[in-house]
Length: 452
Image 1 (cartoon, rainbow, N blue to C red):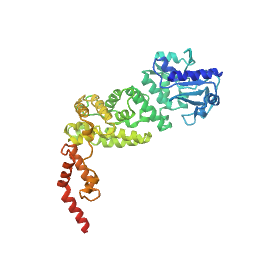
Image 2: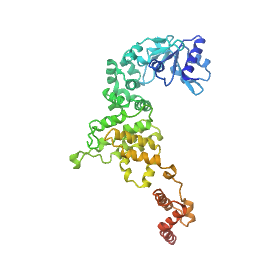
Image 3: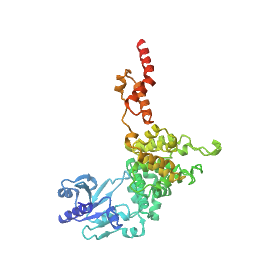
Image 4: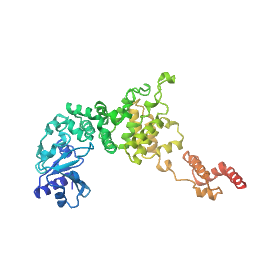
C-alpha cells in the first residue's frame, strides 16, 4: 500500500466510526506544492483510547500529547487528537493538553500557517483557518497567531522557520522575523539532539547555504554555532582562495551540497576549515603569505568537542572527523608512494572524501587535478590490488623462528608496505625479504634476552 493510500484508509476508518479525521500539516503543504510528502499525519477528534480501539497495534508514542503511531507493512502514520496546548515550561513540550472537538482549535496551536492546513482525504477539500494557502502562494513563512507566543512555546520553531524558508525559497514575514531575533538566544534551551536534527536537515535539504546565511541574518548562528560564525572575516591567501574569506568559501561549499546528501558529508563540508580562525597568521607575520599552520589538527579538536555537544553517534563522529583530518592530503597524492596512496583510498567511505575534495576545489581555485588523479586511480585499480591478501601472518613468522612479541607487528607492517609498493608479490618473496631484513637481527635480540 502507498503511504497516501494508508493515510487515507485511516481517515476513512475513523470517519466510518463516527469521528472527524483529516490529513494535516506538512503532508497537506507538500501535496499542494506538488511535492511528495516525506510522511503523513492525521488529525481527529477521536481520543487516543478510541484510536487504539480501532488500531490495537498502534503505539502510544506521545500519549500525553494525544499522539498514536499507527504502523502497517513498514508504513507509519501519526494520528493526533485535536487539542489545545497549555503551558510550555521547558520551551519545547506543552505541560498539559486539553482535547478539542474542532479542527480550527487544533490548528491554532500549530507553528506556521503553511503547516496549519487540513485536507479531506476523499474530496481533497482544504480547510484553511489561518490563511495558509495565501502564504503558500506568496512564498511566506508566517507564525500562526502571535509570533512571540509561538516561539516562547517551542524554541525549536525558531530553527524550523529558517529551515522552511531556505528549503522552499520563501521569505519570513516581518513580525515573525523580528520575533525570531528577539528569541534567538533561547534556542539553547532545546535539547542538543533536536538542535542537531534541525541543523542536519538544513544541511541536507538542498538549500544549506541559504539556511546558514539566513541563520546569521536572524542572529541565530552565533548562538547555535559560534564556531561557524567565527569564520566570517578570516582572510585567505588569494592565490589559493580567490573567492574570499573562510566564511565565503564554506558557504560556497554548502551551496554545492545536493539535496539528500549524507549527514556526514554535509557536516564535513561545514566543519572542514573550522580550525582556520584559531591558526590564522598574516603575510606580515609569516613573511610570505597568509598561513593556517596546524588548522587541520586544531579543527579536528574543535569539531570533536562540537559533535560531542550535539550528541552525534560515535560512527558519525568518526567519519566527520576523518573528513576533516584528511581533507588536506589530496594536495600530496601525486607524490605519494603506492602504499601510501592505497592506504589513503582505503579510508572508510572514501567516496565522501572524494566528494568533499571536489566541493573544496570548486569553491576555491577550481583545480581538480588531484581529484581527477585519485578518481582515475580508484576506478582503474582492482580492489585486490588496493587491499591485497596478506602474504604473511604472525603464525608464519613464528614458524620461521621469530619470537612472539610486539616486534612481529612491526615486521608484518614492513612486509605489507613492501607488498603495497609492488616490491613483493608472493609468499616466497616475502619470506626471503623478512630473512634478509630481520632474520639475524631479531634472532640476536632474542638470544640476548635469554642470556639476561
